Image (cartoon, rainbow, N blue to C red):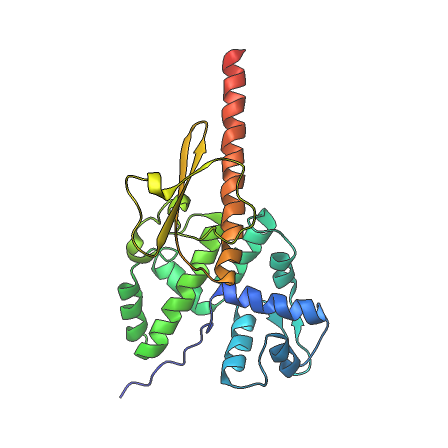
Length: 254
C-alpha cells in the first residue's frame, strides 16, 4: 500500500498568518523570544496542536524566523506590517510570502498561478499521496493566500479559471463604518429591484450616475476591517482613473 505523503503546507492562509505575526510584533517587536511566548502572543494558552500548526505556517511563509528560544518576527513580515494596504512594498512582500511554501510554488507552476478548479487541484494532490482531508486543507489555505494577493494587487482568477467579479460586486456591509456619506443615498423603498431577504442595497447618487452597493446584513467586525482595505484600494484606483481623465480633457482643451 502506498504511503500517504507528509503534508508540508501552511495550515492557515496568508491573511490569517499576517494577522498572527502582527499580534506577535505588537507585543515583542522583533525581539527574540521562545515559541511558547509567541503562541501566547497569538492568543493560545499553550503549545498545543493548533498553535504548533500556526507556528509552522508562519515559518513556511517566512514571517517567523528561528526555533526554540530564538524566534523573531522576520524582515519580510515587517515589510508587510509596516506598509499600508495596497502599497507597492506591501504587495511585493505579500507575493514573496505567498510563494515561499514549496507546495504553493508547486501548485502555481502546475496550475498557472492558481488558475485551475478546486477539483483539478484536489485530484492532483490525491495523486501525490495526500489524504483527502489534507488535500482539502491545502486548497483552502492556498485559495485564501491567492485571494489576499489578488485583493491587494490584482491579477488572480479563482476557482475553475474564471475571472473574478469586478470589485464593485463584492458583497460587503457598510452599515458599521461610521457617519453617513456626504452624497444622498436612495431609500431601498424606491428601488424597483429590491434585494433578497438578508441582503441590503445602498444607492449613492453621484453627478455621473448611481453607485450601488449590495451587501449581506450583520457582518463581523473582522469583515468590516477587511472592507476598509478593499475600499482603500478601490478609491486609489478611482482617483488614478479620474486623474488620467482630467489630464486627457486638459490636453483636448489645449
